[in-house]
Image (cartoon, rainbow, N blue to C red; front, side, top):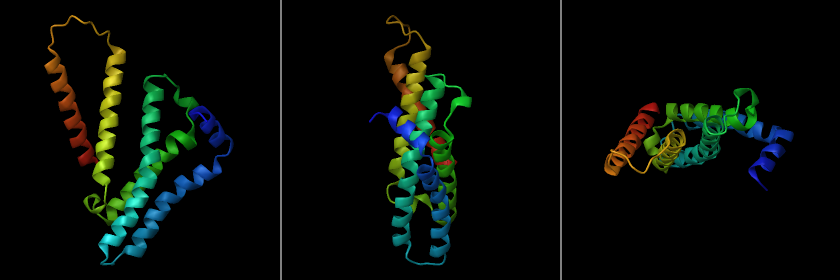
Length: 166
């Protein structure tokens, strides 16, 4: 099965995906209400970790897909699939905001790995877009070490911005 076939299947049967992405913020809110006042932070942090991964994996994939389609494939916004391209991102944002209001992300196991993964994806897409837009010539006056330092500084800037976002 290819991604095109999967997307065609989900477009033909959108309700399971739509219900999944709509229920994630509701679950985050419900878990927050049940956990309110509880002293068992470790248990709730693991429950929130499952919820974070359930929303971040498709959300990050949707963000990456959107960037790829809009930057590289030049897809029109009018042809975007709402269920596959926008609903996971909205669900991701709402779920993370609801979780953040109840528990710090530092207490959720593995959350730093997700933000590091997102930083890596963002940096790689940025480099790919940069390479797509320029005609790289083998003879250049800029040393490769300067380009490498610029890439590392970009990674650090993205990581800092992500930590301030949530």
